[in-house]
Image (cartoon, rainbow, N blue to C red; front, side, top):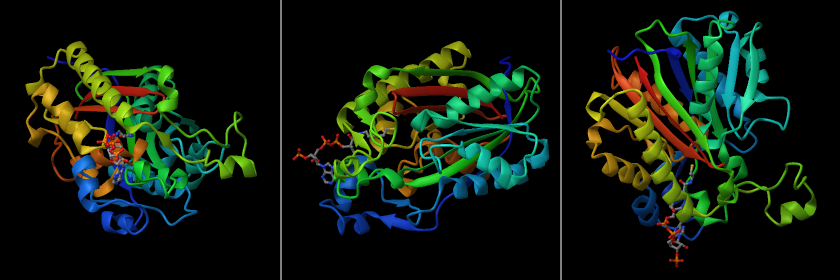
Length: 329
Ligand SMILES: CC(C)(COP(=O)(O)OP(=O)(O)OC[C@H]1O[C@@H](n2cnc3c(N)ncnc32)[C@H](O)[C@@H]1OP(=O)(O)O)[C@@H](O)C(=O)NCCC(=O)NCCS
């Protein structure tokens, strides 16, 4: 009998901007085609904010939905961890803005920077803090407004990303439900294969930094693709091994939604049937730290996760960072 020791999920929620950008909309902005984007990425559309909409707007909505779903009052949340790289401001942490907006008066709040791995990193950090006994309920958030740092003239990147946020309310495991095993990894040697150089202390904003497009996402797509498949496969294997689970015992795999071909390559390595793999990248594109919690909420609300389900999640992002987890519901 597998035991869950890490935090369990009491409720989830997500939020997406209303505005939808289709591939044919992108055809009008850059030299691309619906056919290229669908064949190379599986993406057909993405939700994008109206420029100037802050991340907090999405995250607060996702948080409120998760609290309602969990039946937990904001006043009973004592920890908020937000995985994101597109906070409203350099400081303070956007988690603090969420804390104020939802009325979580007793919560410690901080942001965690792990790019697309932000939610699974935040989940594991919150789980460890809950295990100390010092916290009773955590709100774990993942979200990004990556379109705020997209160069809309760069067809290599602008077709890939969408905006969105997801949330989960966590409590210490009851012994049956919760995190069975989770892992987190990083390798800074590859920092410059996927990064946003401008705006930090290395390149503070100047007219020159804007002209040099240092505030936009830079990516070596093919290299990122290769590392994503290998690292996610290793992390998933580690989680299966350490939790003594076979693939047959996994009811649903939620992989990071970056590219359908990455997901399919991962599925092929594990010979996992496609009906066990959750996919929404076609509708949402890559929402970075929002990817896993949005998918998780959609899977729960659509009945693909039910009480007793064992779910594996795996992700990869800039850093490089990667992480995986097996959770019993
Ligand atoms: C970006 C990505 C879709 C590109 O697909 P790919 O099959 O590797 O394509 P390549 O980069 O080899 O480019 C192939 C050709 O398509 C062109 N191309 C790139 N973007 C294009 C676009 N949007 N529309 C049309 N053509 C495009 C390239 O210029 C290249 O042309 P060339 O052969 O004349 O030089 C893919 O590498 C990928 O998904 N990488 C991972 C990205 C990712 O997930 N990042 C986030 C991780 S969290």
